[in-house]
Picture (spheres, helix red, strand yellow):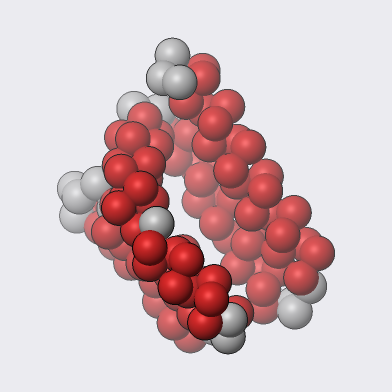
Length: 113
C-alpha cells in the first residue's frame, strides 16, 4: 500500500509542479499491477506500456483543460486505492471500470474520440 499511496501522491505533486503527470499516472497504475502479485499481469502491462503512456497523455491533457475533470480523476483514483486498502477486490474492479468508463466519457465530452 505504501508504494501505491506514494505513486498516487506523486501524481498530485507533478501537477502542482506544472507537469502533465503522465509518467506519474502510469507509475501509479504500475504499482497497482505490482501489488496484484500476478507476474503475467505486470508483464502484460509492461508490454502495453507504450499504449498506456500514449493514452494517458491524451486523457491527462484533456483533464488539464477542466478542473472538474481533474477532480473526478483524483476521486476515481482515491476510490481505487481505498478499495485496494480495504481488500475488496470487487470494489477495486468496479472502481477501475468506473475510472475507464469515465475517462472515455470525459474524452467524448471534449470532442476527443
